[in-house]
Image (cartoon, rainbow, N blue to C red; front, side):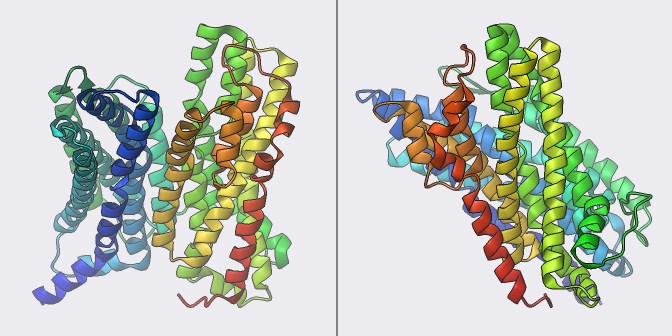
Length: 524
């Protein structure tokens, strides 16, 4: 009996365990960052001594690359993957089944704690060793890097504590994804406060770089204490909660029958959890940028405010919401059997696919509109001119919408080809690469090119399917210098290739997604 219990218990965590290999692979990213930094610094300073170059690379890794890597990839991965996996087990009844055996709730909960710690450990060691080996290959001293990277990696323990606190609320895979994304956006907002125990704020305060690297033991202590406290609260909440039912998020007052595309679209649009989640998260991300508008206005006046409005309308954080929600759109319906039930009605696959797509595009449109309205209203409140602000808002808000629809289409492509957990994992990695790592690398290469930076950036970005990067090109064409008023919007037309790149990949992604879904075996 005990062996059978252990087997069932191990099976319930098998999905999380498989992620370790994937985390180990993406933890090799710091090695790539080392190569980018070495290329960038040696291009600008060809005669720089090895010791000084090592110090610059170490400082850049610990101050820019690793905090961004942890904040925008590993933290959301741990939050979303743990919560979605638990929610999936709960939805399928695995949690109730396991706890019907001689297995206490505390022991079951501690199993998730252990798996989360393993994920954090694999990520931390992969990040530390890959960066250190790349630095050793260039003859650099790695002691400071190892100390700093391991200290920064403790932010993952803080994220784990938050995930464990929210586990009792995850009653389905979708709710786990939504709570994970919500916690991620909330952490970005809370990171603006000067509290070291918040993982995103901890990343900015744990390591100080001068002649060497110094660690804030007070920040580490606060972070670990909060993580333990949140874990204990989560364990007690899980021990006390009712496991026989699950709560659902619903919009009262709307009821539509599934009659063709019209019914699917209306039903999914107004009652979909994805719709509610995206709109809510889009509003939260808008508040992340209000400080940027205020800072630019205080330091550079109205020209700075207008340029900051253009920059914030790039929606740098929104891909981290759109891609995962798109990635669970089809695969989630297939895995839980919803699509088979719907297609047993007089409903065609085309209706379901287009209805789901229109539902998500409608959510993106509403979320983008609210995001734009909040930023434009705040810019007007600060003193931006009405006509110019509305003109910039409408044009760059439309470009943002095109960017997010492309991310959504990419999410649907992943969802059509992969199971839910794999699609979710890859969507988060792509959101980080296309919205953070790739733009930084292309901008660094363009800075080193001869001639106009804007032209070099436009040329280098064309073959790269990164909507945020192409948005940056169009933004830079209008506002190359943040201290001057933005140029005429007709400058955007000077880069038609980049404007087209916001549309063409979207069509390609959706066409491939439909062809795959049209022929797919829906018995996953």
